[in-house]
Image 1: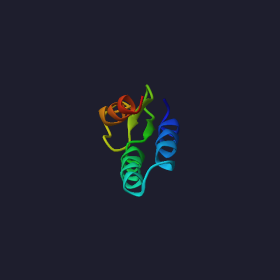
Image 2: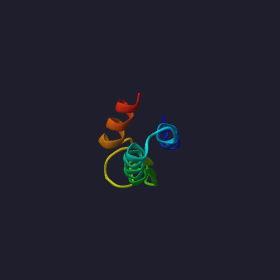
Image 3: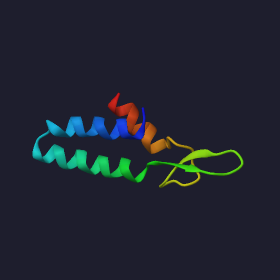
Image 4: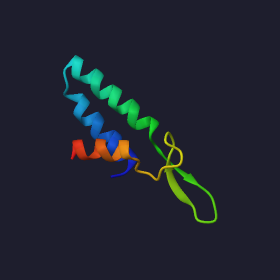
Length: 70
């Protein structure tokens, strides 16, 4: 799933959540926003995590969140 699709999925879950749960969803969304894909232009361009820097995207954090929301 793309980064935007993951954010949209979190937003859908948060929409029907209670006030306490909506704060947890907002925190999760903030984590996902930190770990966005960035293209590094080299001889062979790669997509890396903006927060983890040298780790390919999706990084382990995003992979874990995607598994839990599947």
